[in-house]
Image (tube, rainbow, N blue to C red; front, side):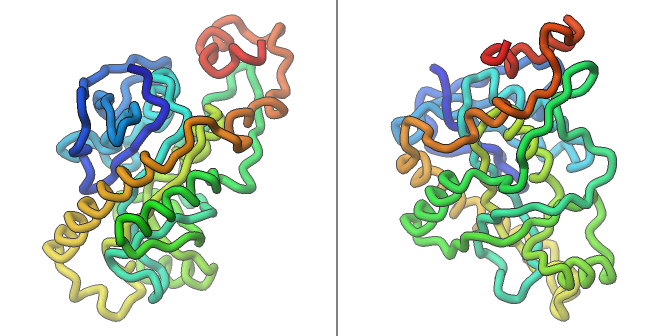
Length: 285
């Protein structure tokens, strides 16, 4: 079974109920181990690969995630589209807990995370002005409507380092910039998916308001866990609806993102680097 659709589950979403004929696949990559085994099976009649971003049991913090291995593993399985689920805080009153938001943009506030497959003799500069596959975003939005979930299209996701949450000064600064959501994971996934020529869209699951909100301190861990649980239930319904809606063939530009991005004469690139990147370069050599 060759999955063409990938699902990355964030906090609160460590499995994907409803899989048929599913099996675990352990994938080896040039970048080390992914977060967990991939669960490959059929969902809504389509071949799908699911990965728990933080590992089952939530063992890996955002700063420890091996983003390259996670995306490479999806690519090596044959995945062409990734729908990523991520728990986030809200930076605007209008994005309420239990809302789902599909952002169009990212701002990077991480430090030192590796977010490219290239280097060591092969240079590539992908276009990243529009980091989300809008066709996938439209499908995810329509799937939210199908599932009866309060879902919004557009906005900006600020990706912070973590694992600690923002200071009040930081939260207010991000609000003054016009940011909509704050999370710790999706920016690197989006960049690497683009380099791997995989369509990528994020579905951000709002658990609570960030610390700028006057009611923030009254929110308990139990409240957040309840929202995580409810969001996970809604996310599973949306995923099934989205998988049903996704067309078999891609018509966007994501599948040719490297066509004009590679600057290096690959004939002169180090053999070791070319071998490591063969999965990405084979169509351009």
